[in-house]
Image 1 (cartoon, rainbow, N blue to C red):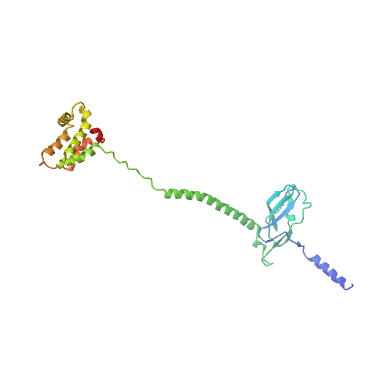
Image 2 (cartoon, rainbow, N blue to C red):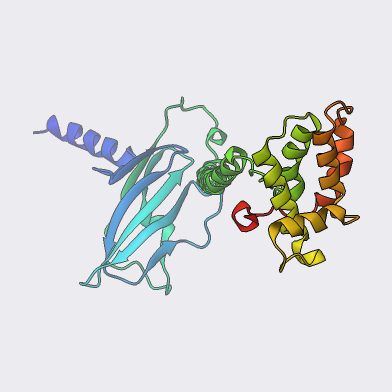
Length: 276
């Protein structure tokens, strides 16, 4: 018993000189890296101590807080340490109303380092870590906003660039009385006008000039005779008949045919049924 007593005191001295570390840490985080821990408390609201700054060895923030039906609040704390070691998160917390922490149980956490003991703590600075965390959130939000704007812009540009060109409808000129008369006049100038075609030519001229020179009450033959001797109305008819009765006359040039039909260019085509 006498020899065992010095050993007992030696053990007590060793225990007293050993720094305090939590038996089981609620959360472990690498120095400079954010750690998380969940705490349930039934007291007034908790928040980080107002006197903490970037030089503090441990920083904490409330990531989420939910109060249940039993009145107890579940906190999700994020912490980051600049010095490796064991800590009690209660040391960096306070209540919103300034009341003591009361029966809040210890919140043991541990900050570990992957660097040698002599490494400077400036390798992991608090401002850099938190700024990097917030910068990551900002970059993610900016990327989402850019994508949200770029997608409709891309769709609109694609529709505009791939839209087929507007078709320009070319209005086809309406046929005129000159268009109806031209093949008949050309055939007459070439001495190839048939009797039926001559009758059609006379009917077209009769239909156009009938109301203008009063050919309504007379017979068709008398009307054609009056039409033939009319100075303006009979010019085309007399020319055609002269070609037919003088086979040896010179063939009319295309330009002469155009000049002969010029008075009828602006006259709408006449329905063949109406002229008969």
